[in-house]
Image (cartoon, one colour):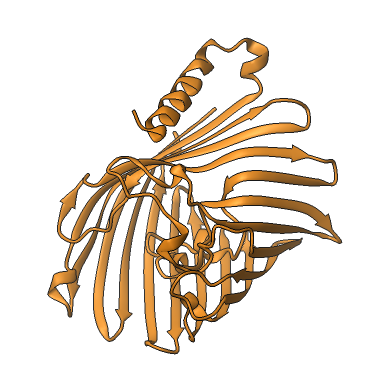
Length: 337
């Protein structure tokens, strides 16, 4: 049996044993599970080979356990298609992997975490509204990193600093469909096997507005010609109780480890009407070597009294001169404890 299978079985047993915890222990255990089942389709494109329909299942589980008053353990599991779709598919290429795991230490005026985690950089990849709102800005989301992160109060805001490299341990593999183990020899900025990558984010909440300023340095790896340095500035503003606005601009030098530059500009709005949330967003991605791409999207979500949400979206993308129309719908089922 592989090391990966040993870890997965041990983790599953530890999770299942939660049902046998004492009342005191159970009160220190937290979990959240969210399952999304849906269809994501390119219904028309200038490139006929891109007209693909992907029926998917994604489940994310977040677990926590308070070991002492100051020390807690955290873990996250993701079940999803771990390979890109190359043709129509339904619930294929599904794998289970550990997206985060480690320990957090509450030091009073700061929280320090060590292990595998997602370094903080930018907000649009998480906050952009709609089914397709984050499609472009997910390019610069940081995730599955090994290292350490610290958050502490700085003035009226919170500064989060992370030192890391991309996960190259056995945890980078997946059960079911194996996406393969990442190694530093695979290349890619930040994939260095050394703690020589840095991300900083400062979040400041003033009334109905949250400002986020981010900076990152990803060191060159095998095949790269230079380091990638990035800056991002984002604003999320609650214009009214039922209307939220978002804007973010992110710029990168040495984009992708190449002698290249890239700029992402995103705007969006989400309007809530009873159980409905209507969203619209637009992102311009301008890469010096390949030109300007555009993504506009509309979304409509309906949330039932039991918190189950039906989400739908329509998107229009122009990438490298190829125009495509996107259509998606899903059901999101949350479970919390």
